[in-house]
Image (tube, rainbow, N blue to C red):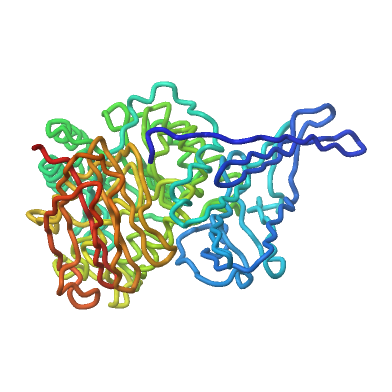
Amino acid sequence: TDSVVLNHYQELKLKLANKDDRWMDLCFRVFDDGVGFRYEIPKQERVDSLVILDEITEFNFAQSAMAWSIPANYESYEFLYRTCSLDSVQSANTPITLRTDDGTYMSIHEANLTNYAGMTLINKGGNNFECDLVPWPDRIKVKAKTSLMSPWRTIMITDHAGELIESHLIQNLNEPSKIHDVSWIKPMKYVGIWWGMHLGAETWTMGQHHGATTENMKRYIDFASSYNIQGVLAEGWNTGWEDWGKLGAFDQTTTYADYNFDEVVAYARQKKVELIGHHETGGDILTYEQRMDTAMQMLSNHGIRVLKTGYAGPIPKGQFHHGQWMVNHYRRVVETAAKYQLMLDVHEPIKATGISRTWPNMMTREGVRGMEWNAWSEGNPPEHHLIIPFTRGLGGPIDYTPGIFDIKYEKRKRYVRWNSNDKGNSRVNTTLAKQMALWVTLYSPLQMASDQIENYEGHPAFKFFENLPVSWNESRVLAAEIGDYLAVARRNDDSWWIGTTTDEKARVLELPLSFLKTGINYQAIIYADDADTDLEENPAAFLIHHDRVNTETILTVKMVAGGGQAIKITPLKE
C-alpha cells in the first residue's frame, strides 16, 4: 500500500551435497522484520526429473504463545479464525500468526508460491510444527523437470502487532515485475450485481428475479457514473449457472437472452464507466483453460480491463485447489490476463503470497471468509475483521467486499428466501460506521461497495466512499491488538483517511495525529457510531461531525460494540 517500498536484506546461500554428488542450495534472507528461507535445486548432470515426496521443514517455538489460525484445508480458506494457545493448534493453513508470552509477534507463511504445492502446517507435538504440502492424486507433493525452487518459508518477527501489517517482507521475496508497461493497471472502486443473489433477492440464473439483465446493468452504470465509482460488476450474465457442476456448463462468451452484451458495453462507454467481467468456472478447470484465451480476448476487444474469476466447486482428477496442479493453473490465468491487459480479482483462489509484485495485474483476491457469509449464515463475528488483517491480509490484498448499509436487511426488496443456509439469523454483525471503516482497514486496490445500490442512493454516509481513493502513498497503523481493535491511516496526496474498528467490546482509542504536516490545519470529517447506536438493536445509527485538527491533535475515537469510525482528513484552504 506504499508507493515506495524498501527491499533491504542480508543473504546467505549454502551449498549442500550428498555422497552421490547431488546438491542443492539453502538460501536465507534476513530483513529487519523477519526472515525467509528456501530450497533451490539447480540443474545438474544425470537428473532429468525431480519428485518431492515430502518437505520436512519444521518450525519449533521455544516458548508458548497465543495463536490465530484456521485449520489446514486443501480446498478452502473460508473459515473463522481460532484464538487459542499455540500448542492446541493441531493444523493450520498459513499465514498463522502468534504472540509469544514475552510479547513478540510472529507470523509463519510462504512467499512466491510458484510451480509448487501450497504449504500447510501439522502439529508434531507441543509447539513443534512441520510442513505438510498439498499432494497430487498419487500423493507425490511436487513434480518438476531438471531444476526446482521452493517458495520462501517466511517468519515475520515484530515488537508490535501493527508492524506486521506495515511489513513488506512477503512482497519483497517475490521477483520484480514481468510487466514492463504497467500504465493500464489502475486501482478502482466498484459496485455490482452480486449481493442481491446472496440475499436471495436476485438469481444468477435467468428467470423472474434474474440480476444481470440489460436494464439492471444500466441502472448500476447510472449509479456509478453519478457517484464517482469507476467500475460495475455483473455476475450471472453468461449461460451455465443452471447447470452448475456439469462438465462444460459455463460458457464465458455466451450471454443470457436478457443481457445484451454490446448494448451494455456501449452504454458503459457513454457513461465513462468501466465494466468488470466475470468468469465462473464451477471448478471445471479443463474446460475453462480451453476457453480462457477466447473469453479474455472478448473482454479486451470491448475495452474491459478487469476480470473477476471464481472456482467454487470440485475440481477434476482428484486434484486439490491448493495443490501444485492448481497453483500452476492460477498462474496461467494471471499470465494470460496480462497478455490481454486484464486486471484480476480471483475468488476461491490460491493463497496470496506476494506475487502481485511480479504480476501487478493480480490486483486482489478472496481467500477468506468474506462478506457473503453474512447473507446466508449466522455471519462473521465482530472480531473476524480484527484478525484477518494480521493473518490472511499479510499475504496480500483482500477482496472482502465491505460496505453493507442495510445491516439487518430491513430494506431488502423482492426478497426470495431461496437459500437453505439462512436459518433466519443472517445479518451483518457490525455497525454501519464499522462497515465504512473496513474500506480503509481491509486493503484492496479494487474496493467494492457491496450493498444493493438502492441502499446507498441519497444516503449521507455514502459520501465517504464517493470521495475515497483506492491507491495510497503511505499507510500507518496507529493502534492495534489482534482480535481486539485496529486503527489504520492511509495517505493519498495531502489527504488522510482513517479507519478504526473494534470487536464485540465498546472501546475508546486516543489517536495522535502527529503524522500530519506541521504548520497546516486540516478538516476532519468523522463518520462515527452515535450515542444510540447499538449492534443488536440499532446498528445503522451514525453521526457525522466536523473537527479542525493539526499535528498536535489527539483524536478521541469512541466505538460501540462491533463499531468503528471512518475519518477523512484534508488540508484547509486558509
